[in-house]
Image 1 (spheres, helix red, strand yellow):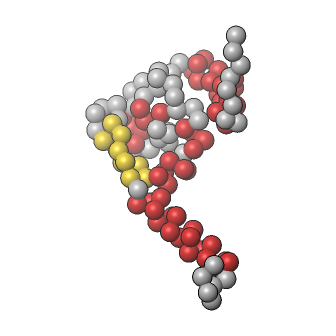
Image 2 (cartoon, rainbow, N blue to C red):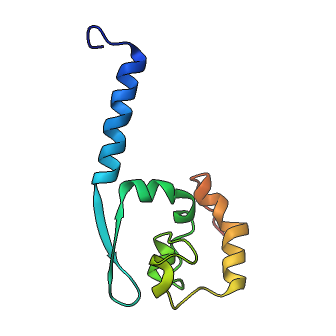
Amino acid sequence: MPKGQTPEEVKAKLEAVLNAELAARKFSYTRSDGSSWTLTLDDVLVRIGDLEMAYNINDCAEVRWGALEGSEEMATCKRRAPKVQQQKMASEYRPWFNERRRPPRG
């Protein structure tokens, strides 16, 4: 602990640094129309729940990166997994990712 600082002050400083780094660290992915979309690590953390279901190759790249329905980012999405498949993934497979466990074999 730095001299003259309370644990709360140190925690606040560390959280500020973390938040700044999450906002500053960026990467881009290619959307369905070939254009580039930039995300921050903070965006990824906000989307963590959506990314649990983001592995389906039948969905567009925008869905796989957790874009929000109706957003500018999602506007280029032209391919979605069939509704039956989406429902099965949400009801049967999502717990595997949410709980970070492997599915049963056989």
